[in-house]
Image (cartoon, rainbow, N blue to C red; front, side):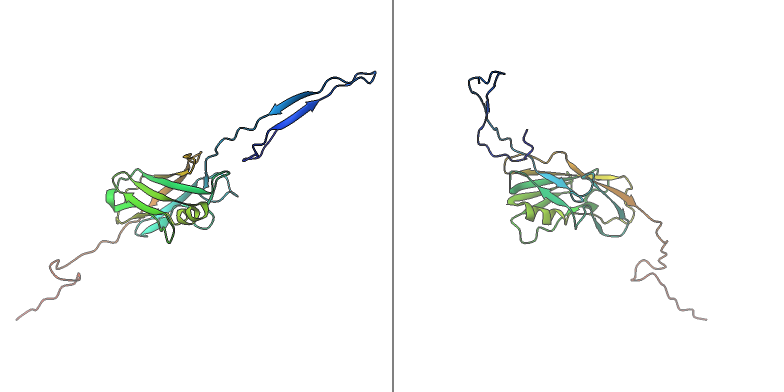
Length: 205
């Protein structure tokens, strides 16, 4: 048995010698165990490895601008046999508010670039960089919605990252976003053609 995630590939040998009750021994039988290395996928936990499960949930409040959709202090990335990632696809679904909602991220001074497509709801991170840098960047992923009356359908965001052995994290980490709305105050504009919502008039006797 070997429970190491990244075992040494050196062959192991097991020798067996049997002895009877007269003290005579058998020939030496040898078994050779070859270690076959298998690439391991990266692991992403949206709220840190110290909690179960790997997913995250958050509430977006109407008119709040944006909200972090991961634990921005504890998200963790690991890979037993690859020190780097080559990219991530972070997908928002559904997107009933179209281009008024989406995902954004801060890549800082890393080698990671980002692009967001409002049609597909996909935020793409691209670039070979360390697990530590990807961890820093992934902690900054936010959901935004600019509407004063957003659709209240629950959104889900999936995180799929790929390492240098071309394996993706399994299972996929998912962030669930609940939309909270509020009744807006009614505004009356007495003169829509001028700034402000007041009006003045002069009465002549």
